[in-house]
Figure 1 (tube, helix red, strand yellow):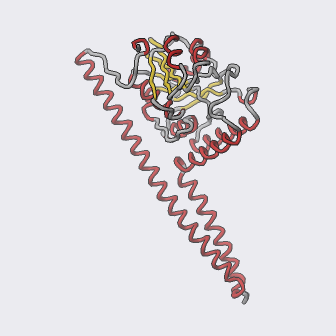
Figure 2: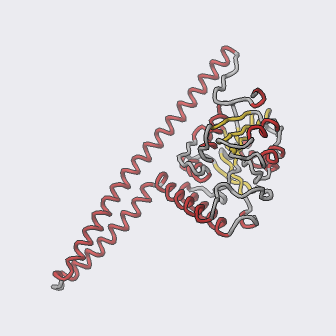
Figure 3: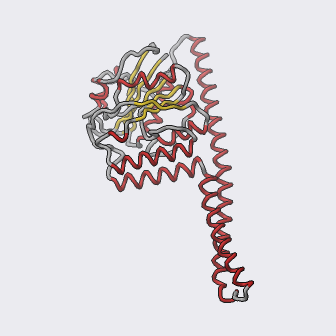
Length: 337
Protein backbone atom coordinates (compact mmCIF):
# COMPACT_ATOMS: atom_id res chain seq x y z
CA UNK A 1 0.00 0.00 0.00
CA UNK A 2 1.11 3.53 -0.74
CA UNK A 3 0.68 6.51 1.59
CA UNK A 4 1.06 10.03 0.21
CA UNK A 5 1.26 13.00 2.57
CA UNK A 6 0.13 16.16 0.83
CA UNK A 7 0.73 19.74 1.96
CA UNK A 8 -0.99 22.74 0.33
CA UNK A 9 1.46 25.68 0.34
CA UNK A 10 1.26 29.41 -0.28
CA UNK A 11 4.43 31.38 0.56
CA UNK A 12 5.54 28.82 3.15
CA UNK A 13 9.33 29.05 2.69
CA UNK A 14 9.91 29.99 6.33
CA UNK A 15 7.99 27.09 7.92
CA UNK A 16 7.89 24.33 5.29
CA UNK A 17 11.28 22.82 6.16
CA UNK A 18 10.20 22.47 9.81
CA UNK A 19 6.98 20.70 8.80
CA UNK A 20 8.80 18.39 6.35
CA UNK A 21 11.48 17.44 8.88
CA UNK A 22 8.78 15.95 11.12
CA UNK A 23 7.11 13.82 8.42
CA UNK A 24 7.74 10.06 8.36
CA UNK A 25 9.38 8.22 5.47
CA UNK A 26 8.27 4.76 6.55
CA UNK A 27 5.19 3.55 8.38
CA UNK A 28 3.79 0.16 9.40
CA UNK A 29 1.13 -1.02 6.98
CA UNK A 30 2.57 0.82 3.96
CA UNK A 31 5.18 -0.31 1.46
CA UNK A 32 6.00 3.30 0.54
CA UNK A 33 5.46 6.79 1.97
CA UNK A 34 5.76 9.77 -0.37
CA UNK A 35 5.45 13.53 0.08
CA UNK A 36 3.56 15.86 -2.25
CA UNK A 37 3.50 19.65 -2.21
CA UNK A 38 0.82 21.78 -3.87
CA UNK A 39 2.37 25.19 -4.52
CA UNK A 40 -0.62 27.52 -4.76
CA UNK A 41 1.03 30.36 -6.65
CA UNK A 42 3.74 31.12 -4.07
CA UNK A 43 5.88 34.19 -4.67
CA UNK A 44 8.73 33.12 -2.41
CA UNK A 45 11.10 30.14 -2.66
CA UNK A 46 8.64 27.56 -1.31
CA UNK A 47 9.40 25.20 -4.21
CA UNK A 48 13.16 25.44 -3.65
CA UNK A 49 12.70 24.59 0.02
CA UNK A 50 10.57 21.60 -0.97
CA UNK A 51 13.23 20.34 -3.38
CA UNK A 52 16.03 20.70 -0.85
CA UNK A 53 14.04 18.73 1.71
CA UNK A 54 13.44 15.76 -0.56
CA UNK A 55 9.80 16.24 -1.53
CA UNK A 56 8.86 13.54 -4.03
CA UNK A 57 6.21 15.41 -6.03
CA UNK A 58 5.51 19.09 -6.59
CA UNK A 59 2.32 20.42 -8.19
CA UNK A 60 2.21 24.12 -9.07
CA UNK A 61 -0.67 26.53 -9.61
CA UNK A 62 0.38 29.47 -11.80
CA UNK A 63 -1.63 31.78 -9.51
CA UNK A 64 -3.16 31.60 -6.06
CA UNK A 65 -6.46 29.70 -6.26
CA UNK A 66 -7.17 29.30 -2.55
CA UNK A 67 -6.80 26.54 0.01
CA UNK A 68 -9.80 24.52 -1.15
CA UNK A 69 -8.60 24.36 -4.76
CA UNK A 70 -5.08 23.43 -3.65
CA UNK A 71 -6.53 20.64 -1.52
CA UNK A 72 -8.52 19.21 -4.45
CA UNK A 73 -5.53 19.50 -6.79
CA UNK A 74 -3.55 17.48 -4.28
CA UNK A 75 -6.21 14.78 -4.05
CA UNK A 76 -6.37 14.43 -7.83
CA UNK A 77 -2.59 14.18 -8.06
CA UNK A 78 -2.38 11.61 -5.24
CA UNK A 79 -4.98 9.46 -6.96
CA UNK A 80 -3.05 9.61 -10.23
CA UNK A 81 0.09 8.58 -8.34
CA UNK A 82 -1.69 5.50 -7.03
CA UNK A 83 -2.12 6.49 -3.39
CA UNK A 84 -4.15 4.07 -1.28
CA UNK A 85 -4.32 6.49 1.65
CA UNK A 86 -3.84 10.28 1.58
CA UNK A 87 -2.89 12.36 4.62
CA UNK A 88 -3.44 16.11 4.44
CA UNK A 89 -1.51 18.40 6.76
CA UNK A 90 -0.45 22.06 6.95
CA UNK A 91 2.84 23.68 5.98
CA UNK A 92 3.00 25.74 9.17
CA UNK A 93 3.66 22.62 11.29
CA UNK A 94 0.46 23.20 13.25
CA UNK A 95 -0.26 19.48 13.59
CA UNK A 96 2.03 16.99 15.31
CA UNK A 97 3.28 14.63 12.60
CA UNK A 98 3.89 11.91 15.18
CA UNK A 99 0.12 11.41 15.23
CA UNK A 100 -0.05 10.34 11.56
CA UNK A 101 0.00 6.60 12.48
CA UNK A 102 -2.96 7.24 14.81
CA UNK A 103 -4.70 9.12 12.03
CA UNK A 104 -4.41 6.35 9.43
CA UNK A 105 -5.07 3.42 11.77
CA UNK A 106 -8.89 3.43 11.38
CA UNK A 107 -8.47 3.26 7.60
CA UNK A 108 -5.94 0.42 7.80
CA UNK A 109 -8.33 -1.48 10.06
CA UNK A 110 -11.20 -0.80 7.62
CA UNK A 111 -13.20 1.07 10.26
CA UNK A 112 -13.30 4.40 8.42
CA UNK A 113 -12.82 6.04 5.02
CA UNK A 114 -12.25 9.55 6.35
CA UNK A 115 -10.49 10.32 9.64
CA UNK A 116 -10.34 13.85 11.08
CA UNK A 117 -7.81 14.83 13.74
CA UNK A 118 -9.49 16.51 16.70
CA UNK A 119 -7.37 19.24 18.25
CA UNK A 120 -7.60 20.21 21.93
CA UNK A 121 -9.30 23.49 20.94
CA UNK A 122 -9.96 24.84 24.42
CA UNK A 123 -6.34 24.39 25.53
CA UNK A 124 -4.70 26.02 22.48
CA UNK A 125 -3.38 29.33 23.80
CA UNK A 126 -2.95 31.11 20.45
CA UNK A 127 -6.64 30.58 19.54
CA UNK A 128 -8.69 33.65 20.44
CA UNK A 129 -12.05 33.23 22.24
CA UNK A 130 -13.86 34.31 19.06
CA UNK A 131 -12.00 31.72 16.96
CA UNK A 132 -12.76 28.99 19.51
CA UNK A 133 -16.43 29.96 19.42
CA UNK A 134 -16.53 29.89 15.62
CA UNK A 135 -14.73 26.53 15.60
CA UNK A 136 -17.45 25.19 17.88
CA UNK A 137 -20.22 26.76 15.77
CA UNK A 138 -18.75 25.38 12.54
CA UNK A 139 -18.50 21.89 14.01
CA UNK A 140 -22.13 22.09 15.19
CA UNK A 141 -23.32 23.14 11.73
CA UNK A 142 -21.43 20.25 10.15
CA UNK A 143 -22.92 17.78 12.61
CA UNK A 144 -26.42 19.00 11.76
CA UNK A 145 -25.85 19.06 7.99
CA UNK A 146 -23.91 15.78 7.75
CA UNK A 147 -25.48 13.78 10.60
CA UNK A 148 -22.00 12.88 11.80
CA UNK A 149 -20.29 13.44 15.13
CA UNK A 150 -16.98 15.17 14.37
CA UNK A 151 -15.92 17.43 17.27
CA UNK A 152 -13.35 19.47 15.30
CA UNK A 153 -14.74 19.84 11.78
CA UNK A 154 -12.41 22.74 10.76
CA UNK A 155 -9.31 20.60 11.38
CA UNK A 156 -7.22 20.15 8.24
CA UNK A 157 -5.26 17.20 9.64
CA UNK A 158 -7.02 14.21 8.14
CA UNK A 159 -6.55 10.85 6.46
CA UNK A 160 -8.58 9.85 3.41
CA UNK A 161 -8.91 6.47 1.76
CA UNK A 162 -8.63 6.18 -2.02
CA UNK A 163 -12.32 5.42 -2.50
CA UNK A 164 -13.33 8.42 -0.36
CA UNK A 165 -10.98 10.77 -2.23
CA UNK A 166 -12.52 9.72 -5.54
CA UNK A 167 -15.97 10.77 -4.34
CA UNK A 168 -15.13 14.15 -2.82
CA UNK A 169 -15.77 17.38 -4.72
CA UNK A 170 -15.35 20.79 -3.06
CA UNK A 171 -17.35 23.80 -4.31
CA UNK A 172 -16.08 26.34 -1.79
CA UNK A 173 -12.96 28.36 -2.66
CA UNK A 174 -12.29 29.45 0.94
CA UNK A 175 -11.89 26.16 2.79
CA UNK A 176 -12.49 22.46 2.22
CA UNK A 177 -12.74 21.28 5.83
CA UNK A 178 -16.47 21.61 6.53
CA UNK A 179 -17.69 20.70 3.06
CA UNK A 180 -15.77 17.44 2.76
CA UNK A 181 -17.21 16.13 6.05
CA UNK A 182 -20.74 17.01 4.97
CA UNK A 183 -20.22 15.24 1.64
CA UNK A 184 -18.84 12.19 3.43
CA UNK A 185 -21.89 12.10 5.68
CA UNK A 186 -24.33 12.48 2.80
CA UNK A 187 -22.56 9.74 0.82
CA UNK A 188 -22.73 7.39 3.83
CA UNK A 189 -18.97 7.12 4.10
CA UNK A 190 -17.54 5.71 7.32
CA UNK A 191 -16.10 8.76 9.07
CA UNK A 192 -14.50 9.06 12.48
CA UNK A 193 -12.31 11.34 14.56
CA UNK A 194 -9.18 10.73 16.63
CA UNK A 195 -7.51 13.05 19.16
CA UNK A 196 -4.30 14.65 17.93
CA UNK A 197 -1.72 17.05 19.29
CA UNK A 198 -0.65 20.45 17.99
CA UNK A 199 2.67 22.25 17.91
CA UNK A 200 3.56 25.80 18.84
CA UNK A 201 2.28 28.55 16.57
CA UNK A 202 4.94 29.50 13.99
CA UNK A 203 2.98 32.17 12.14
CA UNK A 204 -0.48 33.79 12.15
CA UNK A 205 -3.23 31.87 10.39
CA UNK A 206 -3.65 32.70 6.70
CA UNK A 207 -7.41 32.11 6.96
CA UNK A 208 -7.78 34.55 9.87
CA UNK A 209 -6.50 37.85 8.50
CA UNK A 210 -8.70 39.70 11.00
CA UNK A 211 -11.47 38.70 13.38
CA UNK A 212 -14.22 40.61 11.46
CA UNK A 213 -13.06 39.07 8.17
CA UNK A 214 -12.94 35.60 9.72
CA UNK A 215 -16.43 35.99 11.18
CA UNK A 216 -17.81 37.23 7.85
CA UNK A 217 -16.25 34.38 5.85
CA UNK A 218 -17.26 31.78 8.43
CA UNK A 219 -20.89 32.93 8.43
CA UNK A 220 -20.99 33.01 4.63
CA UNK A 221 -19.46 29.52 4.50
CA UNK A 222 -21.98 28.15 6.99
CA UNK A 223 -24.94 29.68 5.12
CA UNK A 224 -23.62 28.39 1.81
CA UNK A 225 -23.24 24.90 3.27
CA UNK A 226 -26.89 24.84 4.24
CA UNK A 227 -27.95 26.19 0.82
CA UNK A 228 -25.92 23.56 -1.06
CA UNK A 229 -26.41 20.52 1.15
CA UNK A 230 -29.70 21.22 2.95
CA UNK A 231 -31.53 23.43 0.41
CA UNK A 232 -35.03 22.23 1.26
CA UNK A 233 -34.46 22.77 4.98
CA UNK A 234 -32.93 26.22 4.40
CA UNK A 235 -35.47 27.64 1.96
CA UNK A 236 -38.35 25.63 3.40
CA UNK A 237 -37.78 27.08 6.88
CA UNK A 238 -37.70 30.63 5.53
CA UNK A 239 -40.77 30.04 3.36
CA UNK A 240 -42.72 28.44 6.22
CA UNK A 241 -41.84 31.34 8.53
CA UNK A 242 -42.96 33.95 5.99
CA UNK A 243 -46.12 32.00 5.19
CA UNK A 244 -46.85 31.67 8.91
CA UNK A 245 -46.43 35.40 9.50
CA UNK A 246 -48.76 36.13 6.60
CA UNK A 247 -51.32 33.67 7.98
CA UNK A 248 -51.26 35.28 11.43
CA UNK A 249 -51.68 38.76 9.97
CA UNK A 250 -54.50 37.48 7.78
CA UNK A 251 -56.24 35.90 10.77
CA UNK A 252 -55.90 39.21 12.58
CA UNK A 253 -57.70 40.97 9.71
CA UNK A 254 -60.43 38.32 9.67
CA UNK A 255 -60.94 38.83 13.41
CA UNK A 256 -61.46 42.54 12.98
CA UNK A 257 -63.60 42.00 9.88
CA UNK A 258 -65.93 39.60 11.70
CA UNK A 259 -66.29 42.13 14.48
CA UNK A 260 -67.23 44.89 12.03
CA UNK A 261 -63.90 46.75 12.02
CA UNK A 262 -62.43 45.38 8.81
CA UNK A 263 -62.39 48.68 6.91
CA UNK A 264 -59.87 50.15 9.32
CA UNK A 265 -57.41 47.31 8.88
CA UNK A 266 -57.11 46.96 5.11
CA UNK A 267 -53.34 47.46 5.46
CA UNK A 268 -53.23 44.19 7.42
CA UNK A 269 -54.87 42.41 4.50
CA UNK A 270 -52.31 43.86 2.08
CA UNK A 271 -49.41 42.94 4.36
CA UNK A 272 -50.77 39.41 4.82
CA UNK A 273 -51.03 38.99 1.05
CA UNK A 274 -47.42 40.10 0.60
CA UNK A 275 -46.09 37.68 3.23
CA UNK A 276 -48.22 34.81 1.93
CA UNK A 277 -47.05 35.42 -1.63
CA UNK A 278 -43.37 35.64 -0.71
CA UNK A 279 -43.68 32.62 1.57
CA UNK A 280 -45.34 30.54 -1.14
CA UNK A 281 -42.68 31.49 -3.69
CA UNK A 282 -39.90 30.65 -1.23
CA UNK A 283 -41.46 27.23 -0.66
CA UNK A 284 -41.44 26.68 -4.42
CA UNK A 285 -37.75 27.65 -4.46
CA UNK A 286 -37.17 25.04 -1.73
CA UNK A 287 -38.60 22.29 -3.94
CA UNK A 288 -36.61 23.43 -6.99
CA UNK A 289 -33.38 23.66 -4.96
CA UNK A 290 -33.99 20.18 -3.60
CA UNK A 291 -34.37 18.84 -7.14
CA UNK A 292 -31.12 20.54 -8.14
CA UNK A 293 -29.37 19.01 -5.14
CA UNK A 294 -30.62 15.56 -6.14
CA UNK A 295 -29.33 16.15 -9.68
CA UNK A 296 -25.92 17.19 -8.28
CA UNK A 297 -25.72 13.95 -6.30
CA UNK A 298 -26.46 11.95 -9.44
CA UNK A 299 -23.71 13.80 -11.33
CA UNK A 300 -21.27 13.12 -8.49
CA UNK A 301 -22.13 9.41 -8.60
CA UNK A 302 -21.62 9.37 -12.38
CA UNK A 303 -18.27 11.15 -11.97
CA UNK A 304 -17.15 8.56 -9.40
CA UNK A 305 -18.19 5.62 -11.58
CA UNK A 306 -16.49 7.06 -14.68
CA UNK A 307 -13.28 7.71 -12.71
CA UNK A 308 -13.34 4.18 -11.30
CA UNK A 309 -13.95 2.65 -14.72
CA UNK A 310 -11.18 4.75 -16.25
CA UNK A 311 -8.79 3.71 -13.51
CA UNK A 312 -9.70 0.06 -14.03
CA UNK A 313 -9.11 0.34 -17.78
CA UNK A 314 -5.72 1.95 -17.23
CA UNK A 315 -4.73 -0.79 -14.81
CA UNK A 316 -5.74 -3.46 -17.32
CA UNK A 317 -3.77 -1.72 -20.02
CA UNK A 318 -0.76 -1.37 -17.71
CA UNK A 319 -0.88 -5.06 -16.82
CA UNK A 320 -1.01 -5.98 -20.52
CA UNK A 321 1.92 -3.81 -21.56
CA UNK A 322 3.83 -3.86 -18.26
CA UNK A 323 4.53 -0.16 -18.60
CA UNK A 324 4.08 2.41 -15.82
CA UNK A 325 1.03 4.65 -16.00
CA UNK A 326 1.85 8.21 -17.17
CA UNK A 327 1.39 11.02 -14.66
CA UNK A 328 0.93 14.17 -16.74
CA UNK A 329 -0.38 16.34 -13.91
CA UNK A 330 2.43 15.64 -11.44
CA UNK A 331 6.08 16.49 -11.42
CA UNK A 332 8.80 14.49 -9.74
CA UNK A 333 10.71 17.05 -7.70
CA UNK A 334 13.97 15.16 -8.03
CA UNK A 335 13.89 15.55 -11.83
CA UNK A 336 13.17 19.27 -11.82
CA UNK A 337 15.99 21.51 -13.04
